[in-house]
Length: 453
Image (cartoon, rainbow, N blue to C red; front, top):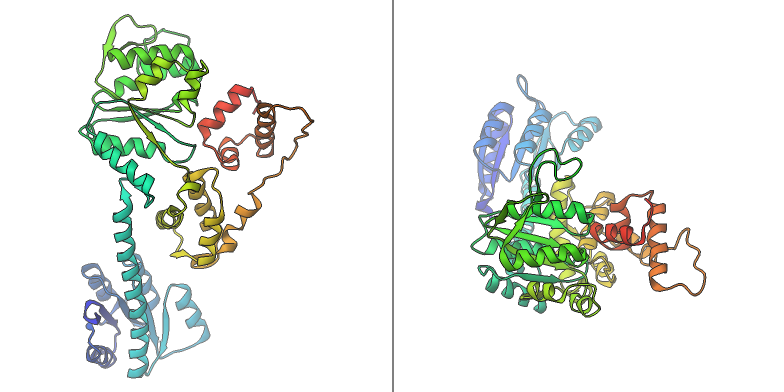
């Protein structure tokens, strides 16, 4: 195990360099040497070293601090140990601030060096084993960008594999934040259309006239502001897939137009006279019960049957709690890299907080929670205290809402949504996060209830 790790000793004193290298080689490590900072950096570019011993004072060229800074830029995971004969509190503080893992004073004692290196290598071995185990778990439970070890999700993965190369329309149903678009992308990229465009459009975020132009395009002069011809999503997705998110929110007129496209694969641009034919697979998604909406007359039953050729139902996160630790670690790995935070895991107490939460906003809420905890954390792991806001927000107060008796559920929802928007000064993203719904759903509620922003 030791021989897998390489060490570089950097010192302008040849006697010191060779002595230290000899001690380390006796312990079984592969050791290279450099007589100055520039030589060390060249060797760091050519090979990855687990540990660097760097002399603090090297006359001419780069000193130890400058050498260490460049090494850490090239190999951020490497451990740097500063060695010096001029030990002061100031130099020690400077070295540690610049990223040195340890600080050793000359003359160096072989036993001290051996114990120090052994301790660092032990930690690196554990980190390597954890990374390998994490990759194995991720491969085992991953399908494209979806991660789960829940049996119901395993059935979804298998269904996606079966239908990926078919042309049949797919309807994905599930609560907001369950990952419906990720499933749609997995279907598209697993099949024969994977090299062709995947075009997504939110049917809840746009008014009827804008959505019609967005889907089918328009001709120049078709309406005020139409200064040039524009291709719609169906044209742009020719040969690929159109993903219609929140299909349950489209108007009756657009339902008729979509039914014709599904039946004939043809349509007219807004203001156009030439029929356009496309080869497009349609994947639709909704948080609504479309069968119930069709029975109630709010959604065309013929369109529902056209959409519901293959039905995929996603369980909410509260029904797949075994995925919470897996997803939390997945988000932590990605977000810590994106945000530049050196946070490597979650404490057992933090995981307990996450497992106890009901996640009304599902996977999207969990991702937001991990990001928020990551931004404010003070340790190298996320703790229960970093997720204390989940307990505080579990029952958010109805600030600014006076609820008289006799209100319907819709009236209560309207006032609550309006109060949340007021509290957050009209910030739709923040309000959607606070309400545990996605932005397209919130836009639809704003429009339906005519809530001023």
